[in-house]
Structure formats: structure tokens, C-alpha cells
Amino acid sequence: MKYLVSILLLVCSLLGQKPELFLLNKYSTNIDVTSWYMSEKLDGVRAYWNGKKLISRNGKVFATPNFFIKDFPKHKLDGELWSQRDDFSNVSSIVNRKNPHEAWKNLTYNIFEVPDAKGNLLERLKIVRTNKYIKVIKQIKVKDKKHLDSFLKSVEENGGEGVVVRDGSLNYYAKRNNNALKVKSYIDEECEVVGYNEGHGKYKGLVGSLSCKMDNKQVIKIGSGLKNPQRKNPPKIGAIITFKYYGLTSKGNPRFPVFLHERN
Image 1: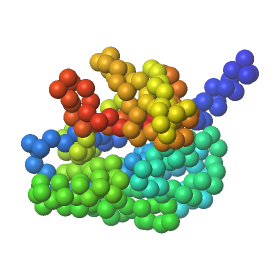
Image 2 (image 1 turned 180 degrees about the horizontal axis):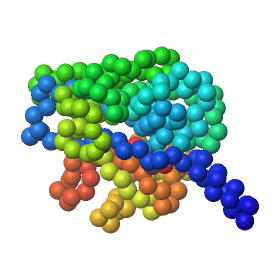
Image 3 (image 1 turned 120 degrees about the vertical axis):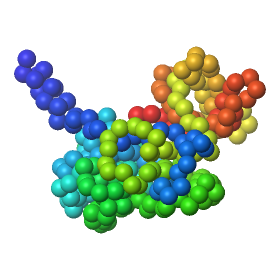
């Protein structure tokens, strides 16, 4: 009985209350975002600061070292734990370890919202005091659709994930609606790994591609985007991965699917 109680106490110490956060819808060209604010969508791990702890959007308390959070404020923050573009797997491995460690020195906490603060978006962000580990994501006012398209192209050509556009005139809210949108030139989806396909040529002896089952039960092959370490040790059968593609073929298959990362 004592052992069971100890396990329960350990679980409770690792879990925080699942935070209520604002969430993004997908952008559509029929939505006029002129005079909204746009920013790069960082491909890191989202984290909510409740004034005492960093918590994942699912309520997991991150094992953050004291040096990382010692200058954090007492008020709430919402942002992305991030290192650099195209580094999601590394960021995820750092923040999901069970104990604090030195690799957190390679991360920053990039703020895009101050939950429950008063005022519009820029007024809320203005109260954030930056330091070595806390940064504020730059917000750019959208002039027109051409301006948005140009910014998106620049971000993606430099290895970024995409863009976020938000109606900056609104007070803080925690829900999903068309006042906060993610903009990408591609579509991203999730699928389940159900098999491996042998590689050829330079990938001989490695995994050439993953066979993945989508929600509609369609099975597709995904090879592009896999790095050599992932070809040597691919995601396990049953793992959920995220991939991107550029529209559908005439047969309804994802066009040019590219592996992005494994879901935690």
C-alpha cells in the first residue's frame, strides 16, 4: 500500500493542471488579415509558465534547471522552448528528460502571449522583461496579402516552419477561433507507423521509407525528411509521426510527403 501511495505522489509531482491556452486555426485566403500581426511559427515545444513552473500544453511539468527559470517573473507566460530552425527533435529530447540538466543552456523561452494580462497583444507583450533565456517573438503588422506571402516565403526558404497571424486588437482569450491562424504553404498531418521499407543505394542497410497509416486508413510511404540516425533507428511500429505534404495527387494521395518529427 505504501508503495502504491509513493507512486501516486510521484505521478502527481510530475503533472500540473492542464492549462487553458489560445489555439490556432488554419489560415484561409478568404480571411482578410490586413492590420493583424504576423510572426514566425517556431518549431519548438510549447510551454506555459504559471508563475512557478513550466508546464506543457498537456499538463506535464518540465524538469527545468534553476539557472533557466531563476529570473522568470511571477506572472504567467506562454511561449515556445526553442533552439534554432529544424531542431525540433533535439529540443524535444532536452525538455522531456526526467531530471534537470545542462543542455537547457542551449534553449530560450520565446514568448508570444501573456495570459490574463490586460490590453491588446502588443500591450500584453510589452510587460515581458527579457533576459538571457526569455525572448519575445517579434510581431510585424500585416500591410496586405502580398506582404504576408512575402514574409511566409522568406521564413520557409530559411528553414522555418511557417507563420502565425493574429488579430492584435483583442484582449486575451483562451480558445480556438479565426482570430489566430497558422499559415503554411504546405499541409501537415499525423499518421501511424505500420512498417518499414528497405533502403537502396546510399541507404542500403538502412530504412528507405516508413509505411504509415492515416486516419482514413490509407497507407502511404514517407522517406523524404528522414535523417541517417532516424534511418538507423526509425520510429517504432505504432508511433505517431507528423509529416508535411503539398496538396493531393489526382488519386487523392498526399503529394511529396516529408517526415517532420515523431510525436511525443
